[in-house]
Picture 1 (cartoon, rainbow, N blue to C red):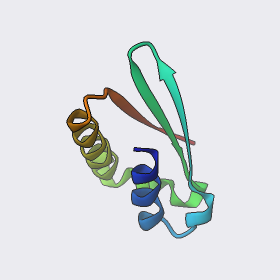
Picture 2 (picture 1 turned 120 degrees about the vertical axis):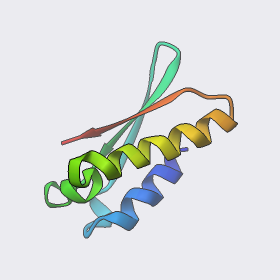
Picture 3 (picture 1 turned 180 degrees about the vertical axis):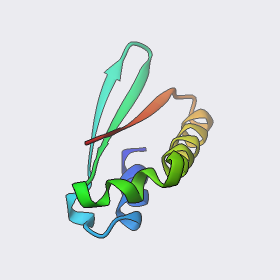
Picture 4 (picture 1 turned 45 degrees about the horizontal axis):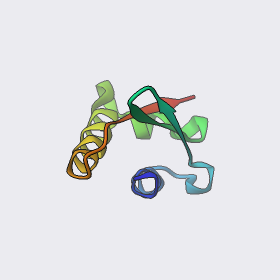
Length: 76
């Protein structure tokens, strides 16, 4: 799951080496914290948050197939 999120983010940004994802457990779900370079934040969030919403939807869909509960936080 973490690798999928890294792959998606690196293909969206101009500085793929600055992409980091940390994983932590929060009660009954896994939380992925996505960090990108400040200049690339808009590319990951998108206009009106559309790209961020689609990333979260895709990740939840993959997690559901594996029987997992996840959340994706985009951290600045």
